[in-house]
Length: 233
Image 1 (cartoon, rainbow, N blue to C red):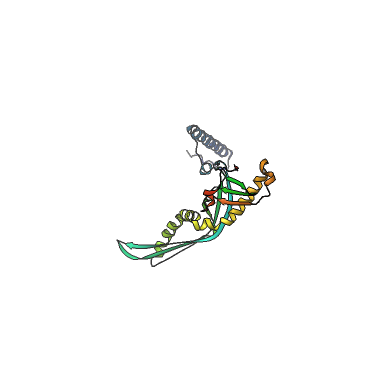
Image 2 (cartoon, rainbow, N blue to C red; image 1 turned 90 degrees about the vertical axis):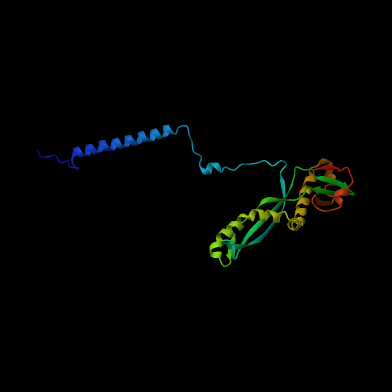
């Protein structure tokens, strides 16, 4: 007996293909349903979900008093060795624009003295706002030395990892704190002048001159001002 040959173009073949397609769809739906049922008690957290910003309240708040901008250069020299034997040096160098910001805290007591129609204000010590901001899009790096082709990349990576600490040390250095002092004092004068106007007992004296000091300044007045102070901010 000759075997029947199914013609794909025939009606019977089309019906068979339709049945097979329906079966495949049903199998897919069952598989997806089983997967959802199997994992019904678990959930995955994407990295984006984990990076939700956290808002932290700072008691009293901060008053930003000054900003320093400049391009900082950092350099490190490494003595390279192989099996304990010196083979040369690798010099790594990074240049990057940095923005230093300084503030005073509003929560601590601000000492205010009115004497001879002059206000003397002693604000809390100036502090750098950390970490120091840098413009990574303009960061420049280079390395040199006999073996810099091999050692340059890891040495630059080490130097870049140290930037946060190095910038913080610079921001808190006496030279940088002193550099921003005059601008910070002007900000303090404007802030205190506006605040005095809001105080009922001092409104009539709000036009008096104001002399501003910071508690971290090495001035004799900090230890010799007469007591008691008239108020605090």
